[in-house]
Image (cartoon, rainbow, N blue to C red):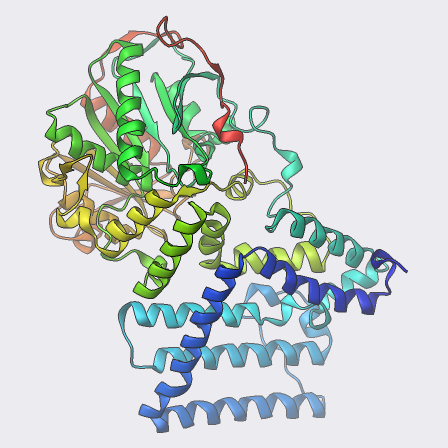
Length: 570
């Protein structure tokens, strides 16, 4: 009998075992060792620390035991009372149709609650507290009964309704993902780069070892005199900014009458090991700046950068300031950290031991694996970005629906070892840029001397670049600053096209007195920040010239957008 012909009971057992194997397979051995090491340390602290408050610990455990006994008694006497679910993982009726599953659910929620409260009670603060809570919550989420076929009534019902076909389909989905080394989050067959995603018309007009420069075709008869250079983060593919025509930031910028250029970063291999931060600034941003000026014949341009792309842009602006180069006349920083004092939930990965261990491994590998980076970000939202797909894809045998953002999220990039280690050490650990102690391209970077007008867009629910920390950037730069706070998180807060009329943004708060005072005095507006930003861009310079052709005699078309570099997958 083949695996696909196993009876349902054996398939459930196989799927539970293979689920564990899959999750281990998607993490390299050093990733697994690091997580186990951190969990061990967390639980050692969890067990030992409460003895400093034995009465509080005793009261907590006593209540937990009493609640569990009450649940068991109610189950045995047939008086089990269904409570409205506190968690959407349990919101189907199947969790209350049979008392045993109601018991499993409520018992798990009780246990999860006492573990969570235990971490609150432990007398540690700051990053140690965040790390303790993070790894404890990750363990709690991983052990949910929803993640195990034999304990999930929704899975069992699906198996009965499909006569076991869902289990066989799920097993096949699992084997496919084992081969890919990652969880499938969307119907990847629904998207093809250059055909229905990343389709804004344009061409690659320059290429070096680090990036391709794309120039997009105009859609208006006249365009702004100043060209617009977009700098995406080098830890992701650029097409998050050019998903589909209806939500493409690139296409929208073109339609507002901009000559748009965009950097498409190379996906590094181990041969890039010694490519560092300075190279991304000199051979990346500064080289792109040079080429844009030569193609357009203009001396001034506007620059828009996202996340680490913004940190690179600030570094480049510091280098240009030392060279008395003012050709980037305005800067826009999208969810960008310039001060890394509080990096949000990422701090759980940033203690000295973990940073050093990771640095050594990355140096050995030559690159920081994009899959490892993606796993780290997904762990921050494990129920949404890991376990929900384990249940849907493997236990229920379903294919996730097509979703362009999740397709992009499943297409990660590597970072060169030197670049990654500089980024983590100099920015996150030492906070050298904000402290005025960072050197780039042999120039001491002094952000306070950078006078170009700057527009900051942050997102109120951003867990990667917390808005109150990004706000500090407004106090570091020396020029006029506009700060805007958008709704939602790190991605959805940025990709918010005006035509959808979704979300909101705050503007016109009082600068110079901290983020709380700014928000208290700001005005809330419905809709997208995009229109507000472009009005600000017009105020910098709204001069118009005839629309420019793509490429030039000195920089002919190399190939159509979205180019070759973006197609390299790992």
